[in-house]
Image (cartoon, rainbow, N blue to C red; front, side):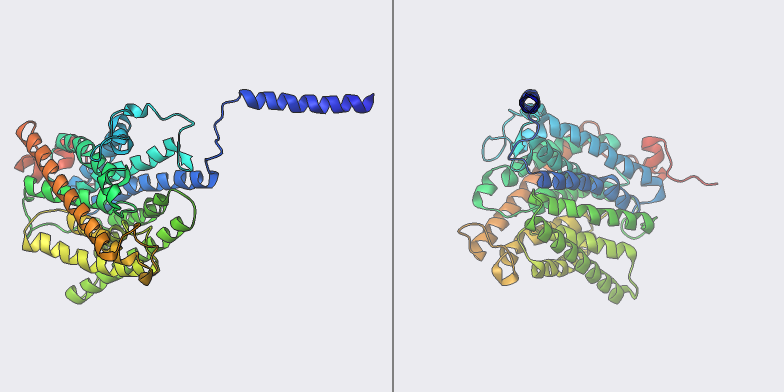
Length: 434
């Protein structure tokens, strides 16, 4: 009897546990991979870290002391605004089924995402959050083109409108099943989606706004290379999440993307340093970290498709090519793209997007081209995709800026520019005299 009683107790306990689990909500689904989920949770934090505080500090160190608060304010406000707009409509436009050009509005406010929604081997809520951090940093990159002379209200209006009518549609074209995806375009982490769009918009902003008062001969040097170097270091670390996270899994692809990202940044930094050393007789920390960003931007579209030789080549091309682009934009064309957004991000992202058609081949230890593609056919797909994106971004950015200019105004007064944006726009100072 004792034995029978013990058995019944054990079976009763087992049945109780089974009943308990049957009424609990099913938070974990068999398709969700905990390793992939953990990595993309980390990568999401890393990409947000790139904007706050990475990019904010990088840009803040490059401006005059009287405009530091305004730069920090731009980054923080854009991060908040674009996060909200991404939830409201951006994610739906980018990643909902629709036409070849635009996603539908069926997922406004992410209304179709539940705790059980999946995207591959990770929760869809996590995929949406990861993509949100991209939607934050892309308009934040444009800040570098208009620092020290734009109204804060214009920053908010432009960034919000630009996110919905430029960034989200281009994301749909490339990553959301749009027409470029059907062509077989290769853009692993944002050479087209992030860097070509932000770089082009930055160039248009610089042209529409006009030059700063003392451009180019009497501009003050960066007020704090220390802040810029600290921000650059944060960007470098965060970029591992940017590129490695774009594999959307914790595996061999993410590992290779991470190492080629790192080697490209390292090589480009050394290239930029050597150019400055030969040209000016001494290297600068601002130049070296700018070279790092150029290498990162250049490798971004290719990072998941290439091997280590490709990372080295893109570091050389990015470091040298972006340095030349800075000279062309600033000195040859006289455009005051204040912090060289197009020359570094735009030119770098475009170079990497085109060269992936060569470096992804087995000759360079790459992972291969899109199905049915040759080097020449893939190159033409990359070229057409870049061209369409640049034209669309330039046109829509120009229209948005002109509408703002005609209504609320876009540029601060000459007196406000002289006094500095920190006090005139925000009533605060970054530094106080003792």
